[in-house]
Length: 90
Image (cartoon, rainbow, N blue to C red; front, side, top):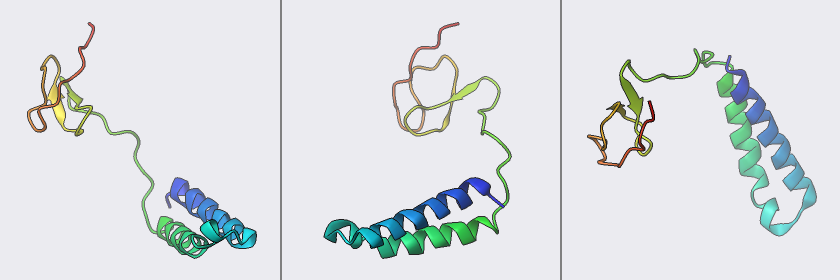
């Protein structure tokens, strides 16, 4: 069970219920999608495995700040998106 998704789903259902009770035209429209979407999130969380922790790049690499692909430490640009990487202070 993925507890973070369960809590988020329950909070979205509660927010949808609050929108429904307020009956303000702009937020009332979103009450049903919030309740349905939050319910789907809460139910889906019961069937998903718990995450194993943070994702780390391979040794000698870091993640591109623009696309998230691994980039060798010391390279100026990402080979995938050509994004300029920040300088690493050693």
